[in-house]
Length: 370
Image 1 (cartoon, rainbow, N blue to C red):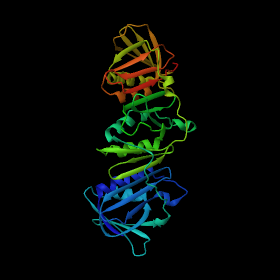
Image 2 (image 1 turned 180 degrees about the vertical axis):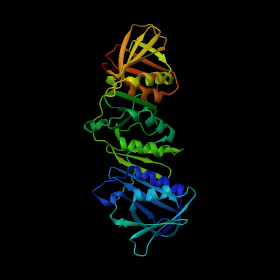
Image 3 (image 1 turned 30 degrees about the vertical axis):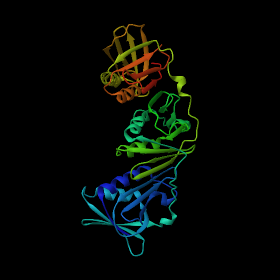
Image 4 (image 1 turned 90 degrees about the horizontal axis):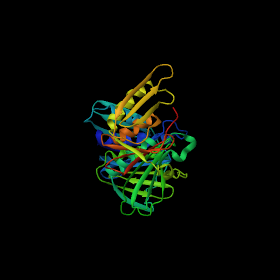
């Protein structure tokens, strides 16, 4: 095998692979990336952790064909440290025991493992297939991923739930039990009968990374156990989380008879300042909502206190609600500079936050005792 390729294409493919390959594994070849230069004008890279697999092709000049596997992290670190406009040459030595990497005056030789031992990645079309613009998919995930749980015992919350709604929306939902984020978009053609699926945290992060570089429609395939995502030059396939996502609609406030509009960016600055004195354990901030204003306060448990007021248009009854300031800041960050509305009924019930002019995104935040 002897090929040459550009650093920019090569590095991007290695970054995608490096994100999913486990550093510590009991199966040595799973720490490797499969390099396949048996085509005519492109090299294909395959990586897998047996849960997620990525197959990606990049343009290359192939002088002699072949394939091998090499340590993914080591190769990524080498290519990352080469000059930005470098041309990189890859070749196997005569014995086939070393991959030679050359660029300019740099020369590296890496140990390889037999490619025949690399796990096969089955690139097949799944039963339910539809296309969605890359920007739309990225927005769906970016607005909800922060609310995914990290608790291993509640594995069915460690991901994003995707399903089709009765009113023809493609909806994604994430929750950790303390907050919920929901985002939806018009249902793409072909997605009408998709199963409700839980996409794992690691897979969501990888799709976000790869979609951020895409500017065309992305093809998504679903079955009861797998999701596939086809980009222009790359293919990702992953197992789905095997679990039952909770009935999230139950936590959406149904009798929220009090509400006020606010500037999320400005509220975030106030909450951030007051939260400086909040408990490091709970990060709790109290919102005392009264006619025409909100008073934000935090007690540092012996270190001091903080309070600040913000003017709002509100004329319902007085209510004091405690929140984890980090959760409130996360939501404000996702809404950005748009005008938002907070709706609630009392201090013990969930609070709903939505943009005033855009209802496709919705956030629910559970109160806390302070």
